[in-house]
Image (cartoon, rainbow, N blue to C red; front, side, top):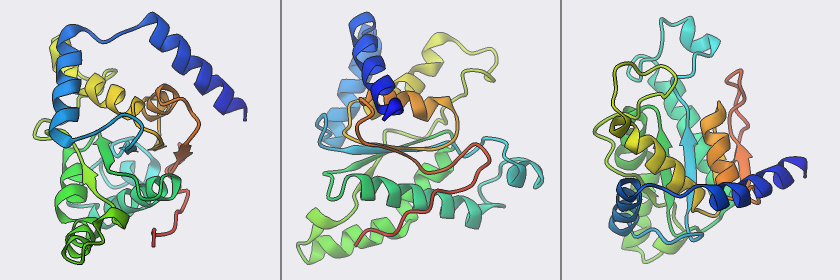
Length: 206
């Protein structure tokens, strides 16, 4: 309840004090139009994969290919959490600090095949549809990226605002996903991974 109150107040205050620049607003509108995202009709999945939890540090740092079973398990669970929060959402928007993880979810995961199968049987309205903006360039981390121009962080803020315009946010480790949850109003939020990397396990949507 306390988090909900704080998030709601932050949501209101932020929108009173801040608005995206013209350039950022154009990016947001373009992405939402191309993905057919309508405010409050979709929900979001935030994945902070490169956070240095022990299991990642002890394996020499983040590597999608080397740690694929672990990472895809985290990612699948995160989508399950979002689908449990907002069953039958029009779409689920995916944001991550790992472009390879986004590619896995929107191109290779079981959710893709399930949606394809459901479409064939005209049952796609009950299937999980994952979407993402252009993820060919990976989001830089604001604290750690070096020698970048302000425009190089455009995708970071684009993801943040788009997540904030959705109905629900299933977010991972760190403050970025929590901020997106606050911008959404905090009424429909779940943290699918704690700071230690442990999952809040969510069942597969039926």
